Image (cartoon, rainbow, N blue to C red; front, side, top):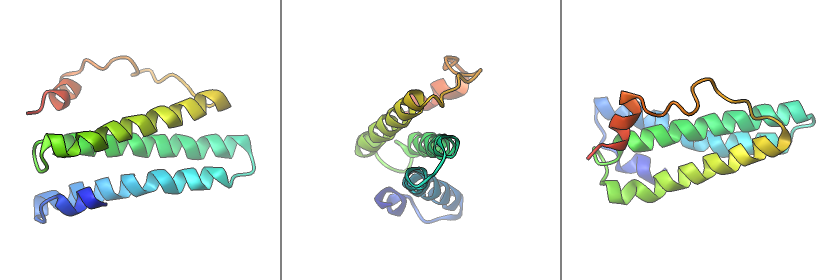
Length: 119
């Protein structure tokens, strides 16, 4: 939530702030929900949602890095989001809930490269 407070308060940034705040808080909420499920299927479903939200949060962090917040100031948060994604992926793999995305491993798109190469 600290990062959201650092994003400028203007019309163009309002959507970014809302999306990052929503995705960031949803990760923990969905994992808490997963922890209270009764069935394995429901558990997997909630962890999948938490992982999707972590990926969305990472996207927004990368987007604002160097643009609205200094890259070195946000690098640790991006790294933490990647660690959370890895943890959730490991949980899914061990619980039998990982499916290979048809797009996985195709990380050479112009869009993804542009995000990585941002100043």
